[in-house]
View (cartoon, helix red, strand yellow):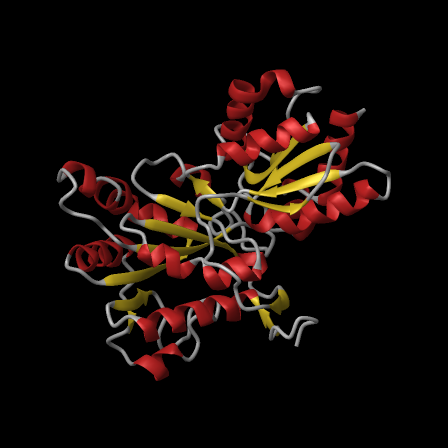
Length: 331
């Protein structure tokens, strides 16, 4: 129990996602989960473990290894009034369903003059840091944030992992949820929500006055660690968790820049054409005269992700890189 009497439970990011799915399946008969190995195997990352036994094969459906086919089936089910949650094992495999996501899910409402909403949720694992090499370690959420007609979410905390799914299922548009693979084992306390999760606004994870550190997803932990190191040097860093990558919360970004006048953007995607580039451009367009230093970006090295651990770590944004970028902006 917390100090105010509110019950607080210890859980992991993986368990929080599982409980979100369980709640959705219990509360709405239209909801079902489908994807590769989500049933008997319990999900490649263990998120759906036990759900098949609880809800049966009609509600937790193992699919063939054809992303285009089962994402297309999910779109068809959504058009027919169901609320499917489609799991794509990793973001890399989503490229096999890109035609379905871009040319069907994202466009049908527009092309039908508002007659055909597609209330579909697609979940997928993203990111590197687990020695899965070049074909299983991409961070392509910035690509999907480029597409009109969809909402793109990146839950970085246990709270968001637990509570983002319900409003995503209530959205009449397709919603893509990117779960960073390094977060599944993260553990912490989870209190009952005081209000529904707001999918339209970024979150200030740490207030600050000297510099804004803007990030999302799996990079949030490293960014908070960097803020701790900077605080030890009397540099007050504000940490902004974007949470929703499309649409971006321009107001939160602008307000943070107005408070601190210096910015570092941390993005595990590649630097060229990245989400960090988009945020940087929006700051230049809307907050140029608030800046006291050029915007800094910390992104992954522009190479296929190495398998060897030390090379992988060198290719990814690390806490030391964020601290160094903050020093360049402040100094």
